[in-house]
Image (cartoon, rainbow, N blue to C red; front, side, top):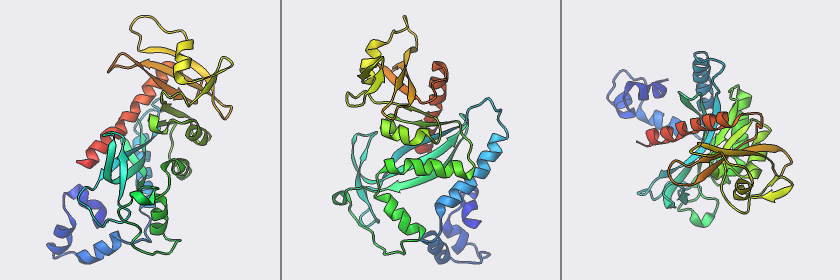
Length: 295
């Protein structure tokens, strides 16, 4: 309880344990507890987040769509030398390799508030890109050992288990939002049976969808569909069939930054084009969360 309340009171471990004569334990007890490989921090975060979500959900109307957001960000550790599993990872925002980790995060949002509910701190899957290996030999059944195995696993294999854990715990959400880095057909197919997915897709010639009896890329479909005239924000949409045989809707929207277009994919074909764009706009909440936590 003392550790949990410290951020809200604006204090730290030194002032709480060393300077405070009323504290019943010392700083060594705190560090031993924080470094314990047997404690499930993931479970603690999920249970606390669930209480917060229930509180926020009671204050909002049923018409407001609640969503899950999957995204990752880079954690820079440029001066670190002997941090366990420290690696050379690629930063998509800066478009270069950095020294540190990737933080894969699953969050819940109602469009006004965002609550992180699960996370995975990822190293590199390539041993050659790691500056340090595993420093401690732990019991394979402990949480710490499982976290270390997870850190060197591909992030795409962690997405479905993270979403399934959240839903089985009791988190209520209508849609799952993802950026284009996760908007691949195989990932969408593994997630759509858990929750409807809305994501941005890449304009690549290697990813094809079936439309009007032909296998076309996103750009090929855009050339086939009829566009709205004028300065419409939503240019067009098309219902396509994916590789797993399931249907999805691709919505083409105008890019505000340059004279181009973007493509959003929604596995719920009954959702209108306007609602797809509006709901996907809630994904920006996680970017604000990343910026705030890094300060």
